[in-house]
Length: 156
Image (cartoon, rainbow, N blue to C red; front, top):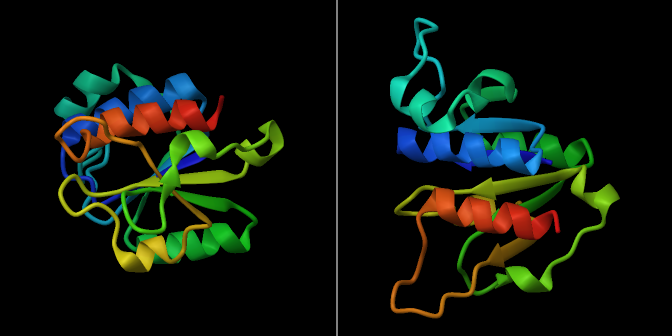
């Protein structure tokens, strides 16, 4: 499984996702659009990411990608199944989605911007759109928390 982070703004969220991705066995993380990377343009560690990731950012392979849409098109060409986490009319409850161990190896799991989520252009590229059912008054969770809940549900 690979993770795709689309326009995540917070370095803390990126660090948390790296740490959670390590725990879930994610093979690689794609940092798309404005998503900050674990190293700055001079190759120095980004402190906030390092602080939260606790070293996971040093050994989980990652790649900075400008266009999420082009990345998803390439992953699909290479046989990956695209699973997006977003609340929308087409989404299904996360608990209703299951992938075999074999299918999990070729899953590309994408989460989006803390405020805007995933764009319609990105959602159109998804094979499956899942959502975490919300029971309280709030309509969403922090992106790194949602990533953790969803990734562990997908690999159950």
